[in-house]
Length: 226
Image (cartoon, rainbow, N blue to C red):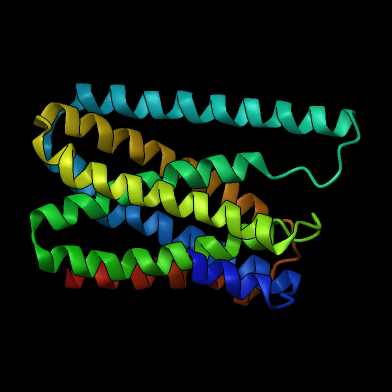
């Protein structure tokens, strides 16, 4: 996360590069859903828990988006310049907590699974860290403020990992299904309503579009090895 952010802070990325990174991050997150979450959710065959967890995730993410848009509208109405992209930051924060939970569960399942999942999540958090900084380009934020944002997001990931190792390991199958289904909705929302929308603000090329599938393929292959 920090490495990706620092890369964005000390370079001058173009709009095309920003779009490519956001596409890549979207592909990686979407792959998390397909490789890590969906198989576990489907094999347990608990439609009631899945319905409740997924619906809760959708409702909460829509509420977050609604509140974030209200904050942005208020900022514009009050002519507040350099307002942070709160919708993206909140969605990424939830995503990182969920990723931390997945990492904690991976290590709870075994060291090998945990290490391989760490490599995959490192790719994701690098691209997300870079995406955060690129999303804040033009806001005239100091490097210290950018680093503080990245640090907070990194702490959320760490908290999620600790919770995954301690709490989720002892959860009943029903509650675990609820948590995973909620995470499924949150991650899908992040990809479709935040990362790809940000990416499509720039003029698209075939290379930028292909980065979504490159990110998906990399995590898919790592997931197969794990």
